[in-house]
Length: 130
Length: 388
Image (cartoon, rainbow over all chains, first blue to last red; front, side):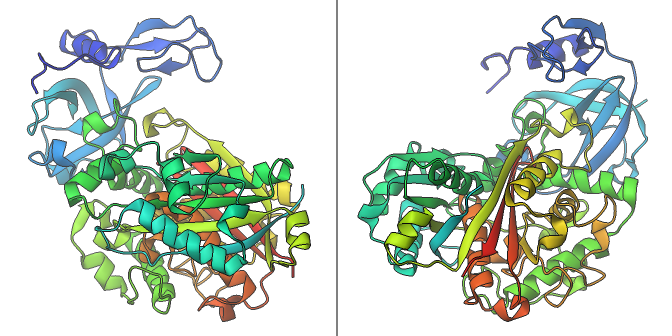
């Protein structure tokens, strides 16, 4: 299924669009908590007045794993590296590209981008060395 | 709160039997529970049935009534879906219904058919326990999610793949004589370390297997037990359940499981006990690191110290707190929807003395089950006590 055929996921696809346009964002509540879309309210406080804020240009890898056994949607992608990275007040999960798998480490500075899943051609969050 | 006698338990042998439907396996487990309890199906007032991936594996939703029918029951029946904590939650629902005084006999448990799927299909099915937008779309698998937790744990607290391997070795050792376990064979640390990598740092032996199986228990009110001369030896005396954000990225910490901490606190308070009172535990070791996180969340160890429990021999069969004497999910098997019920079945037998490993805990009075869903976004803790 190409991206043109797929029904969009509100929030998630909006976020990827913004990353591709060079204007990634997160949602901030009045209390200052940060979240990724789709969010209608802050789960910490119940506040509903969420506003878009610019995502920091770089983030830091908090943890990662080299995945060798994948599901059918990523069969042609394996092995690949999945990481969780901290960008300001939000954490984002994505695949690390642009460096050797064994060199990915906690503390690595990365930038955020949008890549393609090799198996199905769908968009996904990718990180590259800053 | 009042105790809820466990009148009877049953489970199938866990393993690869992909030709068997979930309904068939639940019926077998329920049949064993009826025989164990001396209760007929027409005495069952309600059914709570755990199942996670029926739509994926069998194109079967709406499986509560189906499972009840297979078990010979015409009564209100509800499927409980809470990923790998599905039947732990089913047990808790049964406990609460009896305590509330609304019913006297509840059939609880669950079943899962998994090995009819290919490994990639099963991997995708299990991944559905994660966040579909922010984890699955990035390629996160179920082992991958726990690998992210394990690598962060190593970073914050230390520990090694060898420490994780000792957990797998321990649980395989415990399963050798268990006729219901999927893997009745011992392994060595080197087997774990040299196995093909699934997701770093996990090799194949750090991961619970794809399994088929069913589990069941008959919970009764104390009045029913007295009226029918059942005299069960074991009762559930405390229960707790809690939750957390589904995606790891939204958690405050990736090395703690607050859902389990809160569920345990609730269950301990309900039972009127503390961690030091627990003599034996069955915990959710879907991956080796999961047992570490469970031991810490349950209050048996401070954070960062659970990683050495198996290495030090604390949780082995002859240790101070034997953990997963059934073999755990790692070696007994992990048919997802059946797992929480199987923990109740195995622990009941361990406590009443008719499990192959009962001699190791002959003086045990209190046991605990810890059943987690996803990366512990759901957790159910039940406390059992010898009451005979």
